Image 1 (spheres, helix red, strand yellow):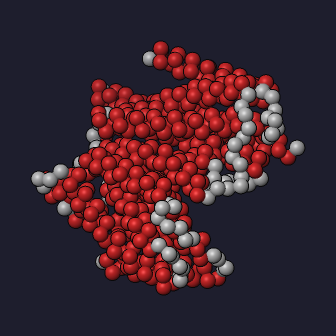
Image 2 (cartoon, chains in turn blue, orange, yellow):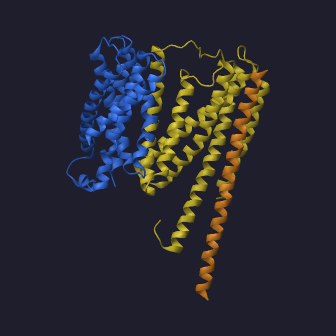
Image 3 (cartoon, chains in turn orange, blue, cyan):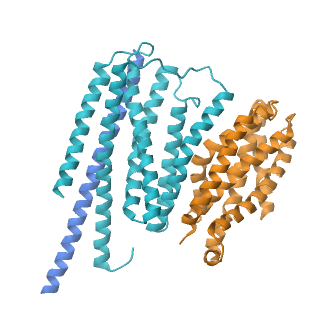
Length: 202
Length: 52
Length: 230
């Protein structure tokens, strides 16, 4: 199943490459949005089965009566999702540099931004995934619920900071944005921790 | 002068929009009141039949 | 019951009176703006609509918190009614803001204007909230998940405002968003517009809640007749 996620991110990047080969574009301007949109939409499909599988296979009740708090379940699923999505993003990043040969002087800054952005995205994505597992049309509801709360907070900040990195800035320049992204991460973690009990209880 | 068209357009949209919302609420209320009366009428009819 | 009916009529009356006063103030009483001219008069009802939509979502947030605490469905009804009214005012706020932007800056939308931007984010969250409610599986699940999403959405509004401000720091635009000074008469007209819309909002909320209660009554009566669980 994880192989399919890798192939999906390959397809998304190939689509962007094809679409942008038809028009003239500045690679440094568009690199950051292309990268983050790929991460966002490829990651969406990984978030979807996190809680839905529990509901479908009937293991949700087992989780509820297990002698662990629901917050621990949340953090456990968060860790596993984070691992899968970061691997996916590293793979996507390699394919991205193959399709879009862009120069970056500061690769550590890029990787750091990707990781902190992903933490916030996966945290909130997990909460929304838990909500939509209890809805009809849950696959469609995940992007519907996630876009308004995620796109204009974390994704906007990370795209902005990453575009500065692609234009040649180093990590010191984007320090303010990094602080805000970390603040978002902590806030979303706290929000997830506080709300998961209400979402998962029957 | 064309600026004033923006002003007229904006004011029209605001007040017409609010007016339509008021009308919608009014019609919703009326429809529900009719349905309540209908359903209560059915109950009373059933009670009447039981008494017979 | 009679007192409640009278109160509702009173609120409607006050709303209509303040609306008429605020229209008079906005159109006739206040002077033309020194830079923008008469088109600036859109501002009074644009700001009032946007303010009411934020108030509506604030009420949804608080009602959601109370629902999660008490599990009383009346809070869910308040939250949902508030969202429905809020989305009306939010749509009006965005359309008037866009019209004003078109008149002043020549373009109907700029991402740099954080007020337009945050109102759009709020509108999208309202729409997502309604989509969530449409796809819920049961009444209690609908209430619980809507409350949770309302809380998440409410927390994300100031975040998106902050994200936009940071983005603007790094990408300054040539479009100047400051709109000149606000004279006392204009501020007064603005306050009147906000008060008028607040009364209208309260009236709409009460009527909408009434509609929800009637729907519940009908469902209850149908259950009594049919004896089925809906």
